[in-house]
Image (cartoon, rainbow, N blue to C red):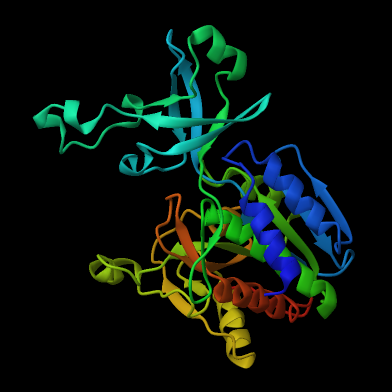
Length: 355
């Protein structure tokens, strides 16, 4: 991966951008897009759209959501402790004891998620998973008045985990779901700017995927593309306890290439074009069977207007929806290379009708 792209990835992951509060990530993504795109704009929902080969035909949309899971402050008690709800899906066992950043009108404020010590927990409660509503955030405030000067109801928060390189080309961070996708679609657009496609390409960093695929629905409606390719993370199954899960969700390994989705949601011609492009360009890939409609931006695009010919490319991800998600840099690079070379072949003569 080129140093410029690697730096962009790290800056994107450093942002605090839970669903509905994506503006930090949007600013980083838009600034990078402006270095090569013909046009960069945002909409009222908060999606950021970069256009390559403006005026080309047909329209192709690439979507990766830039929101992450997080929390929202819902109550401040008399002692200045903050209670919170979850934005997106959390395993409550992960949440307790974590450090957090709260985004406020005064900037980022640190805090910790508190819980009663194990010594004081009743025997019958020790094996029970603590509910989110039984936890709180401690920012060190002396009372409610001080806390309310710093934090408002509705302020978002994320767990305080940053980017780190591991071994063998693996990297770990909070928020790879799905800043990895937002990164990949813009890098694919950057590559397409050099490949000179016939299509007009819309790379979109979408919002609010974790709370209902909202940004993909609205941006796809506005763009009205012929083809839409979503990029998300997929379940890596190459770690302990996942042998049984492979029978349900398939087998996928880090470093073995992006995952190409197959199933009712995905247009068969888009899928075959992705596979043929991977084979022709010797890009490693993995197939992922999805027999039901899946909760990604591809589903939102498929169901927009009269229907968009949708495809999904996923980046294998260990420990999804945790603060320590792991992906492979080579999978990221192969994902955007695959998408760029696939889109470069699309022209007005291609039909994506099912039959």
